[in-house]
Image (cartoon, rainbow, N blue to C red):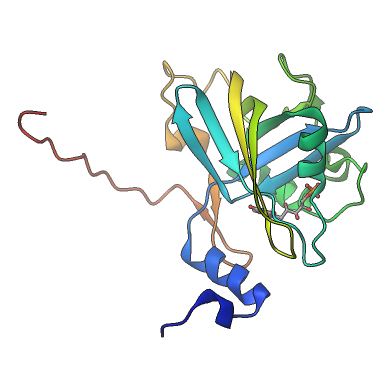
Length: 205
Ligand SMILES: Cc1cc2nc3c(=O)[nH]c(=O)nc-3n(C[C@H](O)[C@H](O)[C@H](O)COP(=O)(O)O)c2cc1C
């Protein structure tokens, strides 16, 4: 099969992307409106960007009507967010928080999660998540405005929270973290099927 993306209807283009780019890590992003209402939603178009400064990015798409997600609306207004890491223990609640609730409804309440104060930013972090990255907005890269278009949100990580049971001088093992990843449809993956492969050592480097 060979074709250009434009030959596929929009929903199928989306389905294609999420079925070939996998597994995807999940940023569970908490934000706050200027008047203090909490918001929480998962995003698997997510990755780490640079270590200097420590930075991450994720992509909130517009919905099928072209409407912006509440997460993006809050970040545009407040320039702050927290990336919480979703794990096996919080999988069900993470999924519950992805419901399309009206703006202003707290997914913390909808999913029975505990918002706890952050140190450097106003949005709360998820107490049940073992790693929280407090972020300050660096840049929003607009990709497109239409249905299933969207934006790339780039954030500088300005404060880290790591559960003491995980912390090993900055190195966190997958056995301890038990992160989950997203596949196609409603499929997820655990990090329990792992193999090791050291990188080649090139003489003279
Ligand atoms: C595991 C998972 C990953 C998701 N990844 C994305 C994503 O990368 N981009 C996106 O726009 N929506 C994604 N969604 C859907 C959003 O979480 C959903 O639209 C949510 O209602 C957005 O909430 P908000 O309007 O409060 O920001 C994902 C949902 C799940 C369950």
